[in-house]
Length: 521
Image (cartoon, rainbow, N blue to C red; front, side, top):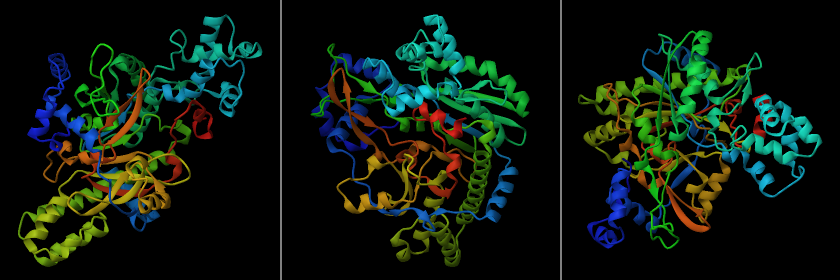
């Protein structure tokens, strides 16, 4: 379990002991969380998170690898011959409600007709949405007339309620994975879950044509995911010639964090009940840690395109996976060599690889003797490994690739969000603005050591990289605590490599109107 236990002392525990009631302690037990963990979280609200030290923004030639066509071909061949176990890990528990924020506002504001550019774009393009036939049927069922007739009658709000409301399609409450995003080759609507099934068959099936996929889902929607998969999996197995093995998990309640008032005292509702909130996608490191595959692809549920536009996606996924396995083989070779006494010349070769290929440096290595340098190399090589595709910054949102300082004083590639950078540090802000690339959440990971044993991924989390944010509950402002992000601080102590991939591989759906972009048509 991820905790902030190291933050507090026995004295702090005594100070907080009277803060909790017997009812609170029973709640902790039910949620499988300790009072010590909650104490640590409250202390973290008080202390905040330390500032991150950034050496530079990563860029081509300095932390971001730009592969030549010859190298791409080499790594494609490398991946084609990989004979380990593979899995595709898809965080899919988030609700789609934010996709429809503008449409919710349209209804709540009592508007009679589109006014904003967003509203006009939505209604002008309504026939282009893959969900249009279902929406039209819902309108017929609820209002005895279709979408076009409702538009002619200026009953725009009725169309939106048919889309978002529980009596209609309920898109305001469903997760993104279950929405109709695209039209398939035959015109049949495809959900993101189906697009991920096809992707899994295209680049994440093993040599025996087994495709393992894991979705993290919310408990209230698990049955809908299972129902959809029961319907579509036999079809896609036949189309792609694979055998799917699909598993699901839920974000663990024990990873939720306590909410506090603005004075850092625990927030309680009118019944005196403490409030725990989901601690962001960083909590999913627990779910990832339970997976057994050698290589794991990680990709967000909404970053998918229709089949006819998927060539770049599958091409570069194979390339970065091939690069991952090539690096893993080299690192494993060095670790096996380090089990025996190494000559200084060999240690220098390994150090050069660490600094130049893995972009990890420590100014004290020049003063280390052979024994110290060998120990340092063993520690740096024997870690989980990830290759992260990075796209050139063209104004899309996303965290950025940086060369950041680690707790041991070394500097290495890290993915940082804007919220992690001190806005009062002019140098850090300048580096953030100078970044040429951003993180599209395009990861492929190797989670076993050189002897084939699975790493305990929780040991490689940096607890000092979480976030504190302001939220509102029933009109009261509260503070919320997010655990280190899954591809940020939760993987902070991994071997991290950045490879440039084209912008065509990044096609997120943040609002419903994104589905009108050419990439989703």
